[in-house]
Image (tube, rainbow, N blue to C red):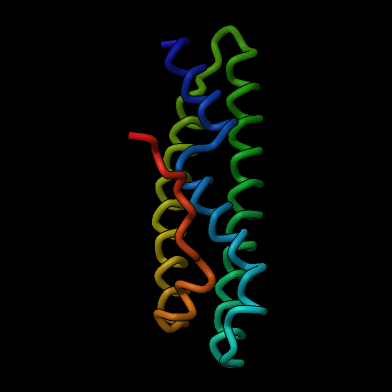
Length: 129
């Protein structure tokens, strides 16, 4: 049980796939001013990015609080870390859902051409045969 608790806790410290997706979306924010020419689309995209920033701050605060609760529970001989770990898991699931919603909100604000300009395809290296 203790090993599982520590594994979950350490995993929460370093984030997961949703954190990478959030960083990917956040990095695209810099592309919007120069690549989205329509003023209304640009403003709508900025609003989505603002909501993403707010979500990231809120999630970081809740994760820090839950980690503190886990640490306190694990430091006590008879401590129960389960509620704090369940809180982390619930927050992670809610974060994933909200992140997907924001991604689709952003997608709905941009045209196909704007989306492709903001999120260009990565240049994949050619593999030797």
